[in-house]
Image (cartoon, rainbow, N blue to C red; front, side, top):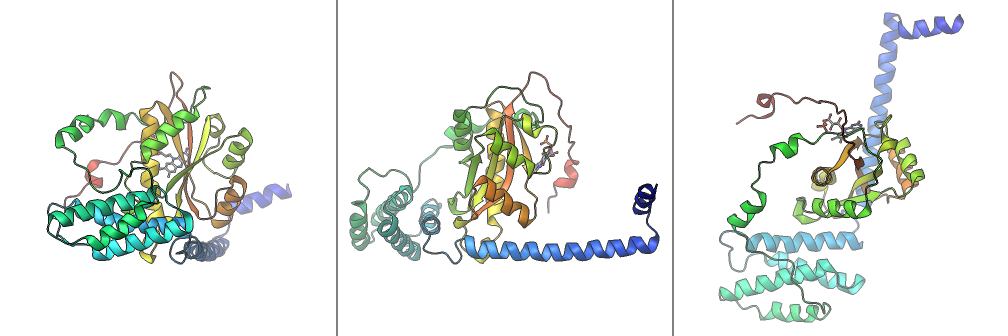
Length: 339
Ligand SMILES: Cc1cc2nc3c(=O)[nH]c(=O)nc-3n(C[C@H](O)[C@H](O)[C@H](O)COP(=O)(O)O)c2cc1C
């Protein structure tokens, strides 16, 4: 009887009780918000490339950022001969430092290939490139395999249109968040295929921060789902649970403090469509959590602290028939404005 009365009071508080409760909730949320911002500041300060210039990933991101400036410059309608001297220096410095500390890799190779094209372009335009040629030759000895990536590429409108000009309305409108899956296993090969497709997503300076972690045991899958608040009733029936992250060492400035969410989000969307094209159903699972949950998740999953978790993705093959939520969309007029 007493418990019932207490429940009743809780459900129907007096006006002054309601006001006090609202004030308490508000104060609690203000403190939680401040704490979460402080945590985000701390993570960006310690895990991004802002103050970690010697970390391999950070150095790599810097090399990509500078050689990509040359790639972009070379791809302009009329590149100016001799453009981008500072980008040349930072690329060279970055490559030399990287090779010295970590050895050559695909990034240093692509940077050198871009510099090679930069030399050819400037030579054609009558500039003396002997000094750069010399430094390039000394760096090229570290890359015994012929380097072919980096720089520009000739493509034709015809080729692009032949590959891409398909009406994708049906493709887009037939993707639903899937919460009913068949028992068929999704192979590692299929996952590799989809992730490789998603890698073509655009990213800031092509730094590619997107990463995917795949839970490989039923126990780990269950442990991850336990910390996510939107998978009740279907998460465990998905064959695989993926965690999509953005590696924060790709981000180098204060201005880029939110870039991981943008690049990670674009990458996630591509992955979802890649799975859709391969006949695999998926459902995004939000990672809208406060710092303690994020920390606990990283601890049990082994996902390093310098990864921002974008979302989880439940994937599985489609059953022959399934029900999906309609999730109707806003009128186009509300979404699109010509200004
Ligand atoms: C970042 C993000 C997080 C989401 N989280 C959840 C979730 O936790 N649980 C769930 O059932 N659906 C989740 N969804 C799916 C949305 O409900 C769904 O995308 C939306 O209703 C549109 O429906 P559609 O995907 O079928 O077009 C999420 C979607 C996004 C983009």
